Length: 510
Image (cartoon, rainbow, N blue to C red; front, top):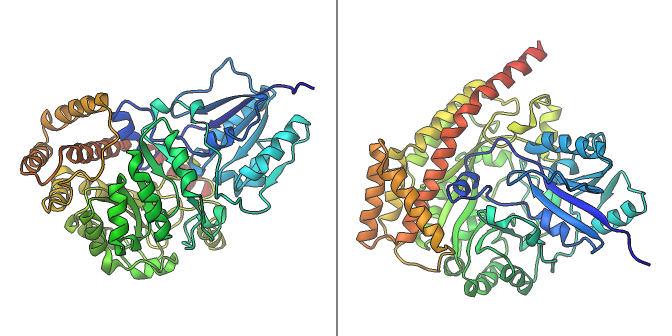
């Protein structure tokens, strides 16, 4: 008997506000619409039987097609786009479609989500997705679907990137492992994927990457190097693929020079490391015992020496933090050799241990608009910070440290040692991208009124001429810094939006 055919729409709602560390602005500089599309969308599409016509939509790229009338809609949500997600859910239910919510936010907001959708997928969706589709076809959707156990994950289906507008993306997400043995109070990872790390077969990962339409990869593993031997072997397997990639790691990656060399040879350009705090008591507060602030500069130096950039991530707003710690952070970055860094204000979301603690202490701003949950706005009641003053001081610190007078000092300090003088792997860059990048860099850096910015550009050219820096590396650094500073400048217009939100909340509390 012939199967009935259905139309399925899988959608990621638009995100209106973003932290300056996201890839959105560099994507736009290079003529793209977004940094990347969440892996869950094409991954779930790959598990759908052939009696479904599937559309994948990322609203940061384009709106959903008006002529496509879905029978079933899957909406993947995080905290900051949950408001838009609920709008979409209402819209498609009115059109007669069944709506399913999934992702980190709905997984820990089940009762809330049931008000807007027909069903909620909790946690990892791969095991429950087929059951959900069968129930949908029988008009018998359950209110929620739970994974009874973590999936094996030694192998994975190849995501349906053919259904995504990958030409509008800066990079493509790949996941080689799930889970993290650490238990940071502000993190959802262990709640979603557990503390046991599950790794894919290396051949399985390589096979997936070979089929990707792009060569610029972001590994979304919570900790790519948690198992050093696995990371070493997968790096060796990636070397022939001629890809450029970024990953996340803990600080101990710096203790393994063989691994760092292998990663650099395989095309790793950036390692994102959660240093989190310069204070041991703040690290202890969030259970990040593996970090030692006294070693940070040594860690950064070792990774740079391997020819890999450190994208250092920090958080301010822990209970042991005070306004003076912003000054200490400023001094640390000023003296560092970090061209790029991320500084976030401590936030929380349902499911985190931090959320549970702050809820008991009556320190949640439950009424605040969820769009502000991106790390660039105060969204909780802090122990030692008043929100408006904290917001202003945070922005002043970030703008100071990303002024080109400061950028110039830190970047030249890193580059003059010659760590980035040799091409360790080919860059995944097309001729068109090179032409576009050259034009952007010339107009942005040479036709500016900012003397520090122009001098920085000329310094970079001098480093290339003296063979302390290769041209491709110089272009990459200049583009990254141009993107971040543009993002910071653009974000100024949203400050009043946040101020108005604080006034609204304060008015309700009176």
